[in-house]
Length: 78
Image (tube, rainbow, N blue to C red; front, side, top):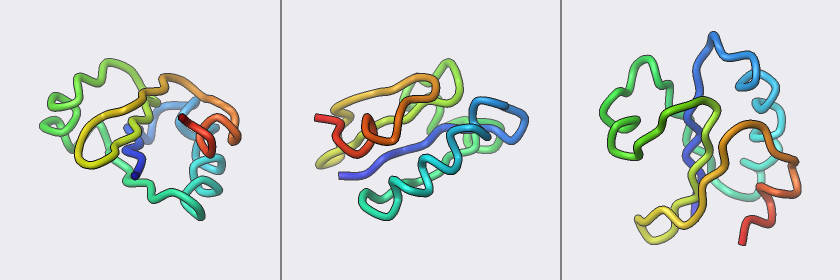
């Protein structure tokens, strides 16, 4: 299980989410994806807004969060 964090440097909510995801990454791996430089992955996952966080398990999306959520939401997603 891991998270894909779709983010952008110009996105203020993304900056707000950054310390939360740093905490999450101590428990669940987080891969940061810059929407401005990785258009293929953005397209593959159909991401339309940032921040978007996708929980992937066994290569498949199992949950998606848009916007900033609480630390607890990301640590207990299922």
